[in-house]
Length: 79
Image 1 (tube, rainbow, N blue to C red):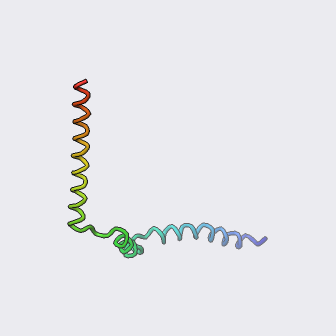
Image 2 (image 1 turned 120 degrees about the horizontal axis):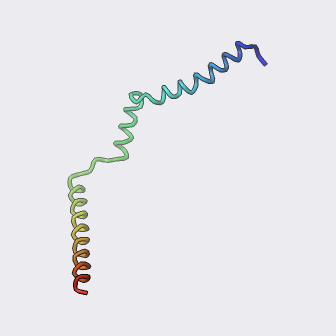
Image 3 (image 1 turned 60 degrees about the vertical axis):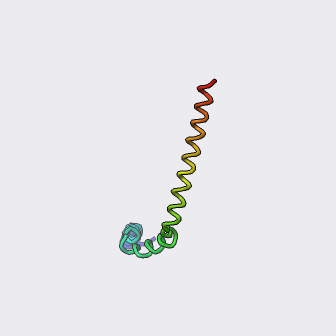
């Protein structure tokens, strides 16, 4: 075992390391550029044609669900 100065130094290192790691990895300005680049790679901007196709598909599905609901309601009311 060491003397009390060695124990104090070890305790200071044990306490400093997590605090320093927390400080370093919670600085958004240090990682902002990399994060923006990664988001641009993962989430490509949508084109106007793709957005229109998606909106048309959603509208078609909604119309189909409405028709099925109306048919089921008319069948239930006739029974």
